Image (cartoon, rainbow, N blue to C red; front, top):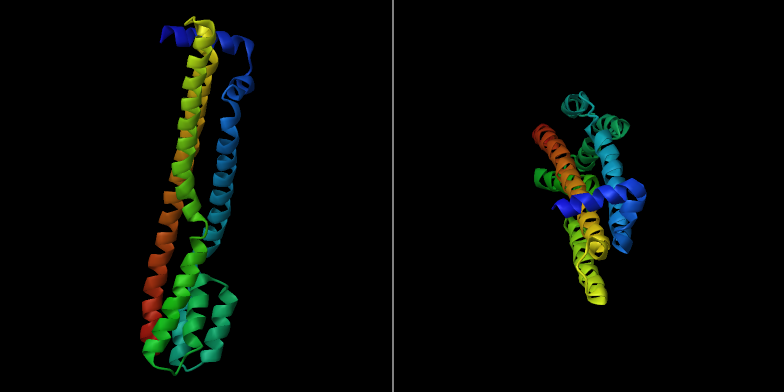
Amino acid sequence: MNAILNLILAVQAKDSYFDIILKAGWILIPIALLSIATLYIIIERSEIIRKARKKDPKLTDEVIQLIKEKKIEEAIQRCTISNSPLGNIFIAGLQRSGKPIAEIQEAVENESRQQIASLELNLNYLGVISSIAPMFGFLGTIFGVIKIFYNISLTDNISIGNIAGGLYQKMISSAFGLAVGVASFSGYHWLNSRVERIIIGMERDCNRFIDALR
């Protein structure tokens, strides 16, 4: 352990952090691409979900009141103005006003599934990345070990100089792979929890909406 610490201190004295990172080799390329994909998905989905969570607090009450007054077209216009997932769900039901309640409920459920799917779009990729990124890090570790033994076989000498490159490849690739895996795993569950809260609210409002159409 002391030898490894001495090696790190010696290399840091001569190289920049960027130079040290590059010692991991080509395995950092796929890990870097996965990190970019993770960052993009988290930012893009966060913005979509943020907009979906900007709930129109009066929408459900106003639509139900318009339904009671038999003003279906006005209710559809009100939902269109809201430009929200819940408004689109209400429109699907209002367009079938006067038909059997089972048909209205089916239309509402179908539109709800589409709206939820649009919120969850690309989230599964985060789950995949959270599994793949650490594997790339582990692959870099394997290559690092191979490099260490290859250098030893060439010189028949177990020294810090011979194992330095392999050690850096092992540690850096593992660290970056795990970091990307943790980020994507955390982002996946964080975004899913936000979607779940939206779904719970939509279910509650949809139940009130369906009751008003009975």
